Amino acid sequence: MAPKIFVTGATGYIGGDALYALMQKHSKDFEVTALVRNSDKGAAVASQYPTIRLVYGDLDSADILEEEAKKADIVLHCADADHTVAAEALTKGLATHAPESPGYIIHTSGTGILLFEDMERQTFGESSAKVYNDWDGVSEVTSLPDFAPHRKVDKIILAASTANVNPAIVCPPTIYGRGRGPSNQRSHQLPELSRCTLQKGHGIQVGAGNTFWTNVHVHDLSNVFVSLVEAAATGGEKGIFGDDGYYFTENGEHLWGDIAHLVATTAHKQGFIASDEVKVLPNSEIDEMCPFGTGLWGANSRCRAIRARKLLGWAPKGRSIEEEIPDTVAFEADLRGFVKHHAAKVAG
Image (cartoon, rainbow, N blue to C red):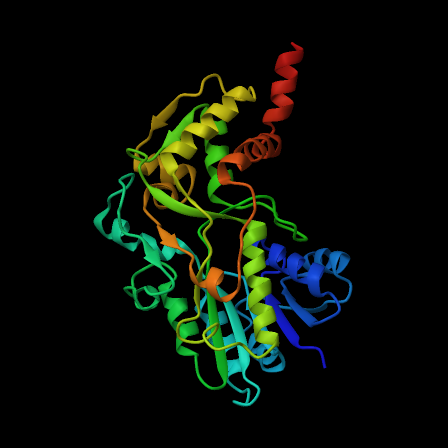
């Protein structure tokens, strides 16, 4: 009998691309059920994946989530890293599995969890030497302060680790690249920086711009999800799931000040802004343009993804975030009407 998978976030950016990668490789190997909010979302999923069973509800539909988790062998949870009701319902449902046939949950967190030190100190735009890792430093990562972003739900998932439930947490950094899912194909940090640059008419920077983040192409990220699903479907080799099953997914590191300058230079070269100047704006103005922008572009999130490379054979190969910038700027310009305006201006 084919393993049963229950997916949340199927129409989102992360979940949509993960589902695409999974179905491309295993369309006939699994019985997949997806949670969707309404008929429009359902139609989008069904048009791309006619064999997927749809369940209608949202992350507050605790009874539905619990019931679907009971039925599933594997839960691929790619929707909202901070939704406690969903996490509790999914782990409660999986806990009904017998130890001889445990359930698996693959939960999506995010390296925003590492911002807590800069947030606590209110230091934005400054560099940090602290780098976390998910191998010999995994115990530090799984015991971060309770006030760290995403930590509350991370704790729920990790606490579910028993003979009945095998958890893994995937913790992506800055994600870039167009998604391949049925609905949202747009990431957040780089597109938002591009949008704000276009709308302000100049580059924007938080403080000195010396903040480090790691990054990953969305297609490479999806390969981690697929590998974890495959591992769960074959019984979960020791060490992949459980108390230490925490996976960073970086494939490089960038300074947000460098990215800000590259975005501004690109937008200028493409003819959408008058110069490639980058301005340091007050934190309050940054946050008005993009909620929590000071954290997204001004607090440090540094990590090393060792576990996926060692245990899953993960070998990311997507193009770099720097190479992605021209397409992201052009896409945002088109989305916001800058392409039409620019064409009219050139035409006179």
